[in-house]
Image (cartoon, rainbow, N blue to C red):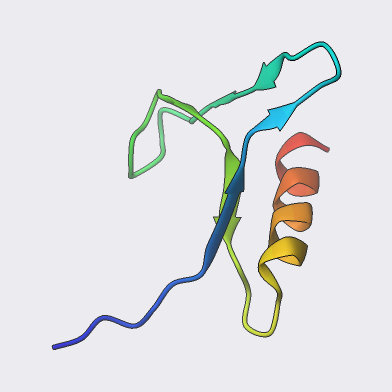
Amino acid sequence: MSQPSLRVAGALVVDADGRIFFQMRSAQRKLFPNTWDVVGGDAKPGETVGAALAREITEKTG
């Protein structure tokens, strides 16, 4: 049985000083709780990967 494909986007966010942004995953997360992670997430139907990444960065960082 084949699995449906899942489109995701993720990125390392690096500032002008070379600092890399990571976020700590919540203890309540089902997958990999309490671990450091990069910004990313699922692309919605009809959304480009670039648009998904821009949305995820805004959602996760404000």
